[in-house]
Amino acid sequence: MVKTNIAVLGAQWGDEGKGKIVDMLTPHFSTVARFQGGHNAGHTVYVDGRKFVLHLIPSGILHAGVTCMIGNGVVIDPDALFKEVDELARAGVSVDGRLLVSEKAHIILPYHRELDVLSEARRGERKIGTTSRGIGPAYEDKIGRRGIRVCDVLGDREALATAVRENVSARNRAIKDSTLDWRPVIDRLVSQGERMKSWVGDVSLALHQTIVAGKSVLFEGAQATLLDIDHGTYPFVTSSNASIGGVCTGLGVAPKAIGGVLGVAKAYTTRVGEGPLPTELNGELADRLRETGQEYGASTGRPRRCGWYDAVVVRYSARLNGLDAMALTKLDVLDGLPEVKVCTGYRTASGTVTEFPADLRVLIGAEPVYETLPGWSAPTKGVTRMDDLPAEARRYISRLEEVSGVSCGLISTGSDRNETIIAPGSAVERWTKN
Ligand code: IMP
Image (cartoon, rainbow, N blue to C red; front, top):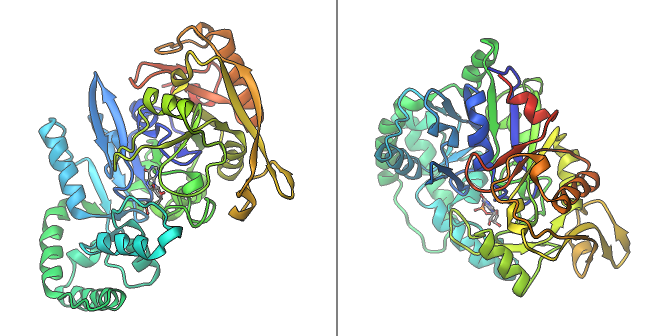
């Protein structure tokens, strides 16, 4: 068992294939912990050809003996959690004794979803394209100090009544003519609390004890750096810290508990929802990437926007998160293209920029600066050794490493666990050595 605790984070706009990477690395860790987001995430994992889509519970649950934790930084829709637990049970996977949910995590209330949809409608042209899961409104209530936490639901009924009354009043103020009654909300929460009770505990303490006992933890990110509320393409972001800082705040662990950081990036770029995507492609090439890569949202089924690899974005992620290595996924989707392009900067009205801008207006009308490299015709699909990749694919990878400022520790060449290359001598090889 390795002793390094590592964080696995999305380095682009999400959907980089973190589920597979976490699933592959999990046997080397005793615990997998989620630190932010909610059931807006969708992690697809294939085990022996069988497809699992997990939204809230870390994909580590598919490995017997691994403990899965959901931290205080996550927002929990109890019904979504129960649905997932029931689906896993039907597939023969039990969460009993293996799932710990933070008592400090905030609850997504039944009407948060409605507020999400309403808030999108009110934004008109500036809509975010959210997953409509109530994520943003739940975090708004958290920051607004009127949220309901898991421990509130399990605690004193009178105190819960006061908190819910306040929350429902805020909601009624937000929706014109709304007269929602707070009483049924309490009854529902109390019965949800009953079912959740046996999974709830102090995640921060449990992680501390795990680490002190010499066991290792994998911190599982959801969404990605460019969707981070502080560092992403604001306001077209999710409402949590999906980059490295979220690990500490969302789980209650100290920064020195994080021994390594792995950033997951696709060999091209995708984004779902609104907001800038400088390398976005349209037409035949975009359709080809979407169909070959099956680029449809795991949570919402929405078609993803597709474009070339953007090194400005990944370099930004590498710096911000202190990436030790990159896991490059879906390389095989590029198989057969006559040429491949890499964006190294943006030509804007005020000159060429190579650092990701804070002000998105800089990106309006910006043109990506591309380098064009030869494609490869021999398939990379299923390749498990670097030396077996076509020379042009190796060249593409090494150029991505140079322009992104981080080396590839892992390359994914297909959706199955085994369709993976671990780069010899890399940080990933070290982390996965028992
Ligand atoms: P929300 O997280 O539902 O509030 O959505 C905010 C933005 O984040 C939207 O553009 C969503 O499409 C995007 N988003 C949220 N979760 C994911 C994810 O798991 N993968 C990719 N995009 C996501």
